[in-house]
Structures are given as structure tokens and as C-alpha cells.
Length: 340
Length: 257
Image 1 (cartoon, rainbow over the protein chains, first blue to last red):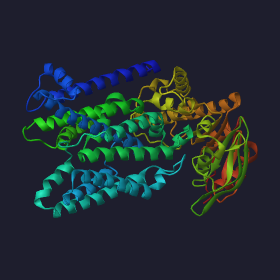
Image 2: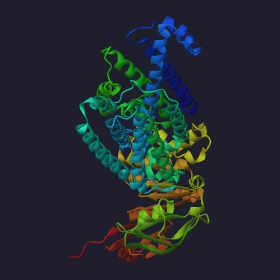
Image 3: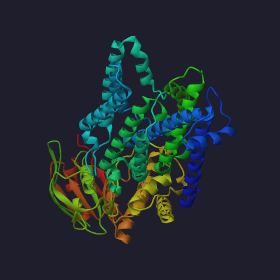
């Protein structure tokens, strides 16, 4: 009955392999689906064309467009989901998400200000990133007490959480202010940015680097995260540098959030419900939860985006609407089953 | 095992402990006794290294706390916190396994040696049948025993316990205390605990440290310091000691109205 170590390792391998295959299947599905359906049989030929750098057939051109968008969806979803897991471990609160500390609200202020002045796309992205960094810095300065110290941070993370919530609402007030004075013509792009939209999100290498680095950090700290999630401050007596770990989680999850929000706007719910669903399905052990939630978050956003661009085609929905519309009922269902 | 040198503790403006020079030897079992707010938990947290002293220092095995690498220190002393809050649905056995953290620097998963240590600790606390339960569904007493089991799995020579008998039923209070006394006697472990039950403390401890809460303190063997007159003074209420066989029973005196 009691799981032995070999069993645990085998279980982790099976679950992660299944999730990886699911992610690949979702990617192919995203490539096939759209206003023009590409049959599965045509995919290998089209991929071959893409691999040689020349997309001549319609199938190859479409696949190129769809796959790069799906890849952006994957990296964004994976980043949000991983940031969610880290934020929940940091705050020891399963209801935390990457946005709870206001990092994305800061990005919104930056991006909307840039959109208000009709700046170029790269300026909007940089402004979003700068906003996220500014809020992170303010949080760090104001809530230093919770993150300080190499070993024994005293008390919990209540100060950090409260400061974050307040900063977040201050940023949202600025957002509302900008929306209310914005000219009609720019309002649509601003609102779409707020909801989170992958249409026109550029393909970049940076989010992948951030995700890779963050995943590495998270896997290396997975055992310490377990100890901290279980023992709170007393984790220091088990050899965990609580202050340093909190600092690491804070900065890495902030970076992930900033990177995700910069490329796709503030897409809601992924960072909350994917870690939740994964914890429900595979257990709270971070050694398995971290890679599982990363893969599942990527796949979820990829599928949600495929749905968003096909459900009322040719019109495209912002993907944030889909994630929230699926996320809210799934979350409620889970919550109520859990409480029974 | 543990010593303090001119240790001072403060909360806000209040001096809790002044110039505590205290030697705790191997195999001794100490009880820290005092009123609410006298600084018992603060002292224990300072000994555990969770809080910096306001003066003086604490040394374990002759080496000041600050000079110990954290992971090595975690193999020397275990700490039982006064209360626990469980945010996530970890299982009981995972909770206990996490206490093996200081022993596997280079492992991602625990080995079978960790599992057998965890199962032994659970069996010692009579909670082995709960191994796969979600910790959040346990009763207060069961959770307390799981926490003590985690401490045993950490397998350290020094045990610091903040109210170990908290929430335990009568039978388990006695069995946990007996277990601690046996660990000290037979395996040469050292225990320092905070508790409010004087009778229980007297039955297992070899020594006691009394804290007044105004800076003054008194340390010595239970025979010397757990006397009715001294305890009455430190606890702020007259106390009677009754002899029952070879046991001492401590009861508060009836107030003389």
C-alpha cells in the first residue's frame, strides 16, 4: 500500500511521458484545425517542406502559421502554470496565482500606456515588461521583511501578499483611468490586451529561455519547496534556507509572469487552475507537480487557443475568454468535489 | 550538547531572559517551565536557530549556531513547532519523509532507507496505519503525533519540543513522554521541551529551567528546582506537591478567599 521509492519514480515517468505525448498530440491537432482543415496524412509532407525552409504548398504555409502560434501558446501557458505553482508554494496558499501580487497589473499599466500613445509593437512589449519589473521591485522593497535573510525568515508571507494585493488594485485603478480617457479607436486593442490574446503574438526565443531557466531552478528547488510547503518557517531547522528560497521563487515566478504577459497579455486562470488540477491528479509533491503542471499548462493554452480561433470562425476570440470560460466551471467542480 | 553564553532575549521593550549561562549535557531531558509569555517558546526558537539572540550566543556541541552549515545543523537538532498549518494535501508518509531532507543532498527521490526510517518513526508514534492519509484530514492529536514522528525520522541527537503533549489524549501524553525519556536514557539523546503539565514534566525530566519572564531564571536538576515554594514563585500561584508512591503530583492550591 505504501508507495516505495521505485514505484514513485516509475509513476512519475509514466505520468510525464503521457503528458508529453498529449502535448505533442495537441500541437498536431492545433496544426490540423482551422478554417482550412489539413488532413493528418498531409502533415508529414508539410513538415518536411518546413524543415527545408521552403513552404510552397498551402498546407505548409498554414501549418507554419498555426504551429508558430501554437508554440507561442505552449510557452505562454507553461510559463503561467509554472509561475502559479511557484507562487502557491511561496505564499503557501493554493489559491494564489501569478497575478495575485500585481506583477501582471504592472505590465498592464505599461502596455496600456504604450497603446494609448499608439506606440509600435516592440514599445508596447517593452513597456509591459518594464511595468512588471517596476511592480516586482516595489514589492521587494516594501515586503523585504518576508523575503530577507539567508536562513530564518521570521513569520509568514502575509506582508508580501497584502502589499501585492494593494499594489495590484492601485495598478488596476490606473488601468481603468487609461481606459476611460482612451480614444474610441484605441480602446479595442487595449481591451484585447487586457483579456489576453495570442493573435499576432510574435515568435521569440526569449520566452523559451526564460521557461527553460525557470524550470531548471524549480526542479532543483523542488525538494526544498516540499519541505517549505509542509513546515513553513520551521523548514529552516531541516536545512532549508527559507529566505533565499522565497527570494528565488519570488523573482523567478515574477520573471516568468512578466515574460508570459509581455508576449500574450494577461491571460487569466491558467496559472490558477492548471496547478490545481495537476495537484488534484498527481498529488502535491513538487518533484512531479512542477514538470507535470508545466506540460499541462502549455497543452491547455494551446488547445484553448485553437478553440478561440475556430469556435466562431472567421471571427477570433481572445484566448483569455476561453481559458476563463472553461476554467471557472472546472475550478468550481473541483472545489466542490474536494470539499465533499 | 548545548550551551548558552550570556544569552539575552527581548520582545519589544521587555527583557525576557537576561544573561542565561546554561549547560545541557548529553542524555539529559530538560523541561522549560514558566508563565504564559515568559519567553519559553522564544527561548526554544532561539535554541533552534529560528530567531537571532538579542545578546550572547547559543552553541551546539561547542560550536556557535552561526558557524554551523544549515544542513549539518539539521542533522544535529530537530525542532517541533507549537502549531502547524497544512496548506496542501500531502500524505502522512510524505510529511515524515520530508524530515529526511538533511540526509539526501544529492538525491531527487528518497531511497528505501528513508522509507524504512519514516515507517519506523510512524510505528513508534502508533500512526503507521495513517501513512497514506491526507494530513489535512487528521485530528489534532493525530497530526501532533505525525509531527513528532517526523522529528524522530530526522534522527538527531538533540530534540527541541514546544509543547509536545499538546492535543494528545491521556494515554498518548504518557506514551510520548515515556518514549522521549527512553530516547534520552537509552540512546543518549538530549531533549529540551516546553510544557505546562508539571506532573508530566517531573516524571520524564532530569532537569528543569524556570523562567520568570522579567529576565531572571533558575536552572537545575528537577530535585533541586521543582519544589513547591520555587514553582509557586515562578508560576505566580501557590502550588502543592503530593507524594503518590514514588511519584510527585503537582496541583494548584485552593485560593484562600
